[in-house]
Image (cartoon, rainbow, N blue to C red; front, side, top):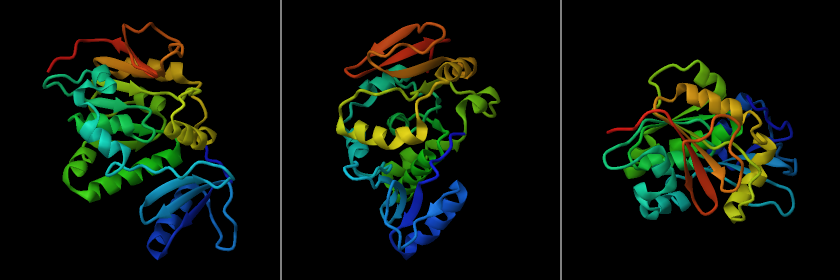
Length: 262
């Protein structure tokens, strides 16, 4: 399991959020922000709008939280291109085919949400405890919101833990497709990516064990493994991909094992 920066603090913005903050601090082994203490460094904030991570350093980007109900993901759900999106094509969504997907590097759950919105059942693994907490909070708020977003969130399940270990000792139905997006030194210039990378890289670092992650995924998936990479990044060390799907800033290396059929 990835460790947590010990100088991170947990705060809350009102009586309704205090109990959540106390439980979260205890579970993650973090200190609470003393009311007389000036906020500095990374702050995990329990707010009425949801759990969010903020860097309190001067000039730092704004807070990050998982929001499946409004904002960019809601817009993408409606206007994102449906089954034509690159992640959907990579995992094999077409016609009536909706593979069972394991997203072994879930992060903030964006790719998983896109696939779930298209009808896939998606099991997510996230090993960094703070990122997993942000994702779990976003999922819970989506379920409470009701309507279509809640139906999508119901197709998403989250496990906190090390994907390599979990895949090596897998319990339950075998995923048809495993989606991997290991941390890599991103050069994407979009403000959103820069903001999240600046916040998360101190927590998650890079993924030097990406070759082991790929090997474990290839041993488990019944049909295919897909690996998201920056467009010009080298492939993960291991067997060569059987296909490649290129986008403007990223690509998918596809490792086929069996043909997906509806």
